[in-house]
Length: 250
Image 1: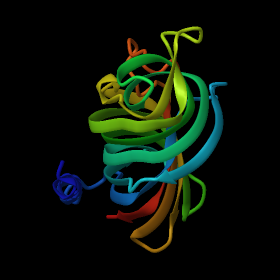
Image 2: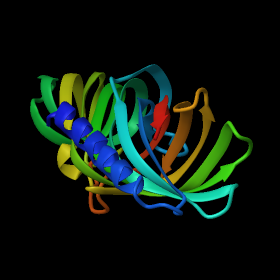
Image 3: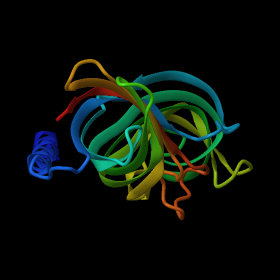
């Protein structure tokens, strides 16, 4: 996936719309481009009993580029939408017990693929790319401050959910199954990722200069990243991310 081409396409589309808007006198349209970084995680909400301890966490290089249009209906209220290309990802390590998963065991009492309940330690890496359409209500609090709230829908164009398991054992099938020691194993759940993701977004934006602004958006998914019929992980996992960046107002 060529990130530069997608980012340039979003910016060029916004510039074209902005140029067209200049000839539409009397209409209260405003056009913006934004760029920022996503910090957060893909996690079960709430944390299940199977996850006993979070041992490590680090964000990946996750960024967002967006072109949007605002329609002001009153001096204080507007509606905004646009297109956003974004990546969402993380690296996390945890200690787990009776964690339902499918492993490819590389070293242990037995090698090969096995599904069951794993007890031990895992490290997971998530990296997904989305094209997102937000539809937000905008409220101007002051000449420099505004807040936004509304839903979004996202389409995953690429992504992965991979990791490793080690220092533990897996019970074949269920918690009472045959115990198999696991020194090292891997897993790849990319085949279970769903294409569409939707949820809610809340944010605030501060106009630092005439055209330049700084913003923060919090997005929380309402559906799991995994398909409904995916059972290699026994609980749903949701995207929860904070975006911090800057924007340009035309």
